[in-house]
Image (cartoon, rainbow, N blue to C red; front, side, top):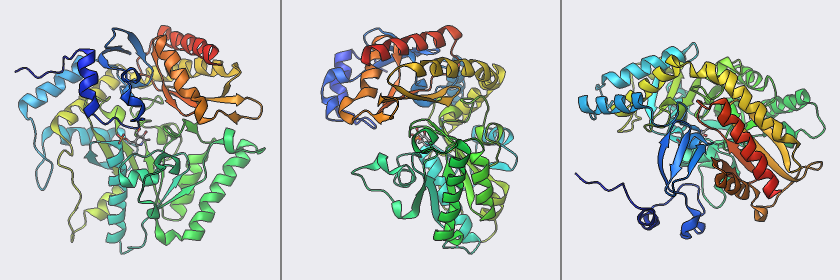
Length: 451
Ligand code: PLP
């Protein structure tokens, strides 16, 4: 059979006029040279249609944790498809791959998180978390306990509900289901700290949560959702102790804590899950996606606590939530093989050293005149650029500083992700020290060129 994916660059660019890209300036994309056609990948590198070898500085999209072209995962997917191409997990059906992966995730996840609902994207994992909690509260006879607290700067996905939980800036000109959601203050100390110490700033964030709960009424709030480190909102780390303190307040008010670990799980911060091992608290729900299969198949998981599972599985009502491809055999096989690689090659442990070197290398760029803040942790980093360092004056959208820098790095062999005035780096987790050094050099030269 001849299915044509082996197109010339011109053929791709013609065909691509029928494709709607995600988070793209669709007007700009009408110019052919605005697009990069990626045709191959191996390890920490990708290749474009012009034959350029580029360091994949964004790991696909924060997801290719074990690196590109891993035969073990590809074989696991094809073996699975040969054995069982598809069956659903609806009604009383199950299959070995989905069951085995759910068991494995439950074993890796913190203490009481033992039940897994699969879907195919981080957005739907977050929607599923909310739907499950709403149903949980209905089952407990608390039909009003439905609101969700999120935060300024959050990114939770692009479905109607996930976008409502995302920071309002992401949905300008679009509608969201926002009546359900309240956004708490941004935890970004460098931008919002305003003369306070970091500890004092943290106190204001905790107060914001308490005051909001008092105002809205705990009886109306189902959950607080938070990424351990805000990702697509600009790689924002919260003050020390923040997550554990927020979790304690939520517990006092019987508000469930949803940790959105779509990016941070499966090794990016040096552990399978960051909430407990890095930030010292155990959420009621963890949602995860990207690193779960390292992007080889679309798969996400909503991992719920024993308490939640006990309530939703009581007699007297169906679990009326389902996606045809929930736990798809090929995706589940990819997840199992990916986790086996993470374990066998001790990739999270490797991240604890090389990820720290990466962090140090990028933080070393902080002295540059236009670098306002370098932030993040391990292989999840962001650089914010400013027009004036002392006043933190921001570049304007017309300056297009992020875009210019991303073009400058790509010219030198590094893909980085522009996000307004921020450049995001979230490479594969298998970077060598030499590649880390090269990223540092490319960034330095690119900053000098654009400054
Ligand atoms: N949550 C976080 C923290 C994310 O970074 C993303 C995507 O980048 C999502 C949710 C949404 O995941 P998806 O794009 O798979 O729907």
